[in-house]
Length: 271
Image (cartoon, rainbow, N blue to C red; front, side, top):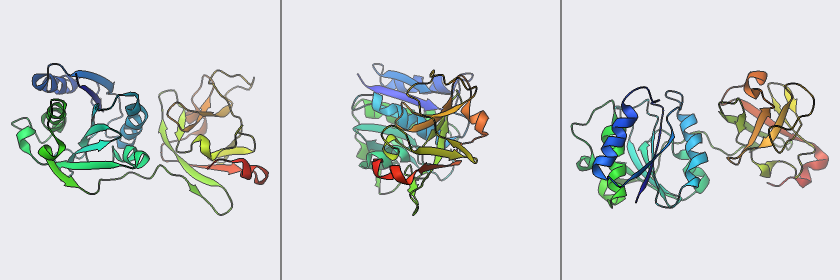
């Protein structure tokens, strides 16, 4: 029984998600379809890439992930199938899978060229239903990647997840995601900070954040205090108790963050 997940920016008001599920179930009535989310902000490829990166490892080997955040639908952007982390990823070649491929480091990609596996007629505005859903269903019932397309050596890549270490020991990263609670997810990980967080501080918009917490409800007695917390997706986050850190900081995705480590503590960092 194959697992097929769906991640889109379609929302649930219209027929789009239901149509994709119908195509999958028509080809494979035994498929187990899991909705990762359909609330990705419209055309926000970075948000799609982050949510897929954070979620895919919760699924078993062989899971098929269909991700459709596709502002280039109908254009020259390629539809692709990627094998990575013992799973399959189907969607547009616009960077949405690049963070997974970068983190895992071992992947194969196929440009979906065999329209035998597409739904016909094939709309130029709804590849989620007519290309990606039927290809995912075909893979779920035994089609091989080499049957659905031709191998490609490269894919479109978003900005790297890796922060940069400067000559003076500072680490330059950025905010890669802001969740619905206003927590700011950075591309820094626990390996970039001291064991207990002491001697480290994050600088965002000329504001230094040096408080570390292990859970969100920790109360320091200071209203709207910003703190650093290890997030569940494996990245360092900036948060505020019962408040939006993004609003307090006036922060946005892509915004630079600088991790400053006091010289006395640099030798204790784990990189």
